[in-house]
Length: 378
Ligand SMILES: C[S@@+](CC[C@H](N)C(=O)[O-])C[C@H]1O[C@@H](n2cnc3c(N)ncnc32)[C@H](O)[C@@H]1O
Ligand SMILES: [Zn+2]
Image (tube, rainbow, N blue to C red; front, side, top):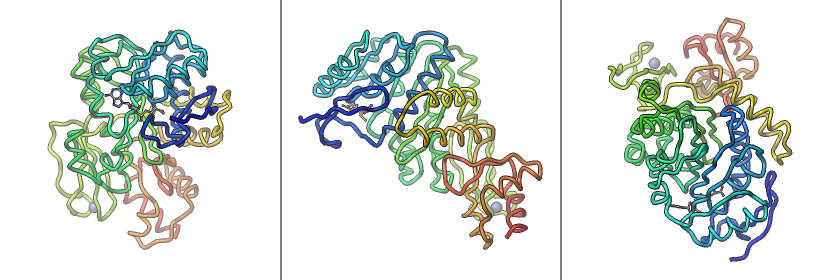
C-alpha cells in the first residue's frame, strides 16, 4: 500500500496515499471531528483530574489515539485495537513517529479484546457505520467516572430514512423530519444508556455533535444502581404535529402517549425511546472552547463558531424549530433569525440558534407563540 505523511492537529500521520483505499481506512474529512474530540479528551482530563488511560478501539491508522496523546499532556498510555494487520502496521509507525509513551497495539477483534476487561478512562469507538454492535462489549472496559466517545455514521438509519434498521439496531422508532438529527443523537444516547444500565452504570452526556454524515457523542459513565436508574429515567419520547408544528417531549418509558395534537387535533408523529435529558454539559463545552483557543487547528475558527453555538443551545431543552419550514406552513416571509431570537427574548422566552440545522432555533416558546411572533413581523 502506498502511503503519505500528513500533519493533522499536533501529530504527523502516515496514512494511505488514496483516502478510500480498501487496505486501511482514513477519512481526511473527519479532521474536524478528530480535532473536536481531542479537545473533549483535554476537557475530560481536567474534569477527571487524573491521567487518562486511553483505548482507541477500531483504530484504523491510529489517528485518534495518536492525536489525543500528542495534543493532551495528561495521557497515561494509549492502547490501540484493530483487526486489520495492515492497519496495525500503520498504527505502530504512527505511534513511533509521534514518540508516544507507552503504547501498545492489539491486532485482534475488539470483542475478544473487550472480554478481557481491562480498565480505561477513555474509550474511543469510531466504527464503520453503526456503533451499536460494540456498545455492550465496550462497557467491559470502562472504569467508574470514565468516558466513552462514540461516532455513528449510520445517520440515515438514526434519522428515519431506514426506520426498520433503526428498530433492529437501536430498538427505537426514528422520525424523518427537520429535527431528525437531534432525535437521531438522542436515540444513540438512549442506546448507550441502556447498555450502560445493564452493567449497573449511568451516563452523563458531556458533548454531542451532528455534522455532515456523522454524529459524535461523549458521555461520562458512572457506576452504581442509582446512577443507572437516574439515566434510565431520562429516556422518553419526542412527539411532533406535522400540521401546526407543535412538538414536545414525554419523559418516561411506561407512560401513556397522546395520539393527537392538543393544539389542532392532527395525528402526532412519535420518535423513541430516546434520551430526553441534556445533550451537553455547558462547563465541559466551555472548557473545550478554552482549549481550542490555545491550539492551532486548521479549522480553529469553524470550531470556535461551532462551540459558541453549542454553548448557547446547551442552555435550552430538547427539540428546535426550523423557522423557514414554519414560515412556509404559515405562508409568511421568514424573519432574520437574529431578529426572531431577540423578539422571543424580549417576550421573556429563551431562544438560541442550534448547530443541528441552519435557519432553526431552540426556544422554550411553543409553536403557537412562535407563529404569532412570525406573523407580527412579516
Ligand atoms: C472507521 S475506521 C476507523 C477510523 C479511525 N478511527 C480514524 O479516525 O481515522 C474503523 C476501523 O475498525 C476496524 N474494525 C472493524 N471491525 C473491527 C472489529 N470487530 N475489531 C477491531 N477492529 C475492527 C477496521 O479495520 C477499521 O480500521
Ligand atoms: Zn397540531
